[in-house]
Amino acid sequence: MKRFYKQVTVEPVEAGFAIRLDGRPVRTPARAELALPNAVLAEAVAQEWCDQGETVDPATMAFTGLANAAIDHVAGNRAKFAADIAEYGGTDMLCYRAEGPEAFVARQAAAWDPLLDWARTRYGVAFVTTQGIIHVAQPDATLERLAAAVDGLAPFTLAGLSRLVTLSGSLVCGLAVLEEAFDADTVWEAAEIDERWQAEQWGEDAEALARSARRAGEFAVGRAFCGMARA
Image (cartoon, rainbow, N blue to C red; front, side, top):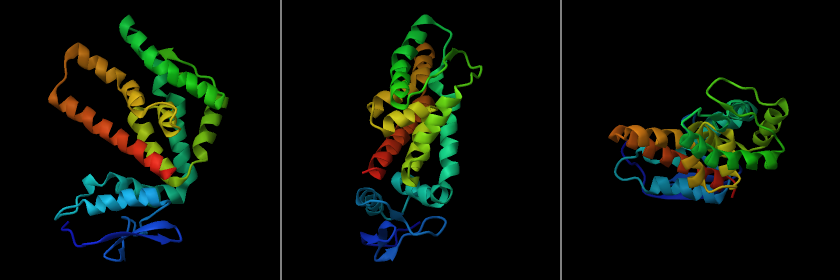
């Protein structure tokens, strides 16, 4: 749509910090006020509105999109949303290893074992790993403790964590980034090991490269959003 405003401001409101366009409140798709939980996140969202040119392009406003999701979809159903994220703990990508070749198995272990070791220590849990894609059940205590870690998070943090977990296919990867236990780029490289291995064996095409770059960018947005939500 055509840009219809000149000035973007951030104003304190009861719900936190709201975005104003020429003094008028910005609304989410569900018509709620776009209010952020802290000034850091509000300024980041406001900057996206400032950066728009003659037309407003939602595709270039990733923080705004996640904020809309937190308000419209997470806040009113936080427990269910948290439970859906926690379900990834039962099928975490890090627990499913390749059967071969040996070099690929070793590469997965080098990248994935430190993440699982961290989660074991951080949450006092145990993991069952396997070779292949046949489902293996994780201990009930593991699932309960990981679910408890997610359940305590606020809506805006959950919105960002959801992005990290769904992109990586791993609850452990998402929590490791959220808690800043590992560098986010290192975690993303671990999450992309399978794709990178396949590219090494068969070569990369333009479509695959573009998809990888897009997903990496989305993961970076999720990490930044989580960091600002918890500022």
